[in-house]
Every structure is written in structure tokens, then in C-alpha cells.
Image (cartoon, rainbow, N blue to C red; front, top):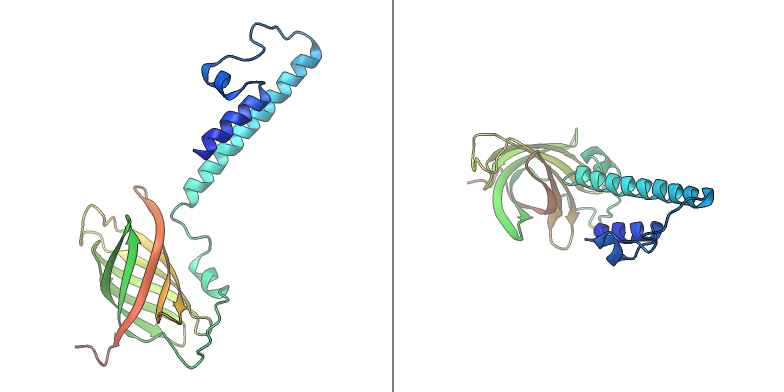
Length: 213
């Protein structure tokens, strides 16, 4: 809507039209002929500026569409550049075991769904698997033991779960530790040929493998 209004007034400014005349196709100079060189040059300049403006707007729309469903930073950059300060230095949230996750989509929370995560303190990598209302999936990612962010990639196994939702696609998840809530929170990002989007994501520890029933 904003872009439509912008284009309307942008064109009206450079073509001496008000919004009404632009819509109905009538200008203030209707019926007048532009014959002198100055007038022709001014109209040519206005045409070029208007064309450039339209191309700029189209480029912005294309960029926004391309970025939809994509994080601004890769998981590696997200974890490396995180400046989240953890005041409870003795608390270590990366414990291998059973976790639960939930994500926000279509104006509702989905979950919690259980998943298994294993953290390697030497390589700072995490792997796991789980099942949600879309299908079975594998998880791999990285994390920082000092600033406590995690960058995960959830890859669905095609042919499991909901066939209308499970395209065998990947979901990028970027979360940081919330000390007060005692869970990880952040966003998920999806980009496929049929859908693109992003929204809130939460990840909470349930129990260790030793306590697993």
C-alpha cells in the first residue's frame, strides 16, 4: 500500500499531475503542445527520473521478496558475532538430552514437540533429531559456550508427517539463551518454492539422557 501511494505521488510530481488526474489519465497541460527545446529537455529529464524511480522501487520489492524467509546472517556469523552477555557464568545450558521446541506460525503456537539434542563441547557442534506436526527431521548446528547463541538447521525427511507441509525442506533456527525464562528463544526462517516466512521459536531443556525414561 505504501509503495502504491509513493509511486502515485512520485509520478504526479514529475509529470505535473495531481493524484486524481494521474488516475484518470488527464494532465494540467492536456491540449498544450510542447515544442521548444527547453520544454522537451525538461520532459525528457522527468521521464528518465521517473523511469529510474520505478526501476528502483521494483528492485526494492524484488530484494524484499528474495530476503523473505532468509536470516540476515548465516548461522556461523550469528554465533560468532553474538554479544549476548550471560551473567550466570556458572550455568551451562548446553546439556545433551531431551528438549522441547515450539514455533509460532499462522497466528498460533505449534508444540511443544520433543526432540533429542547432543552437544559436543570440543567442536561446539550440536546434532539431533525429532518429530513435529510437519514430519520427522534431523538437526545440526553450532553454538558458543561463552555468549550462548545457537544456529541450527532442521532438515525434514520427505515422506513423513504432513505431505502438504513437508517438502523435504530445511528450516534455519537462530536462538539465544534467555536467563530469566531459562530457555532459548529467537526466530525460525523458511524459504522454499511454495512458501517463505519467519517468526518466533523457543527451545527448552527437559531432561538428560541419564534421566530419560
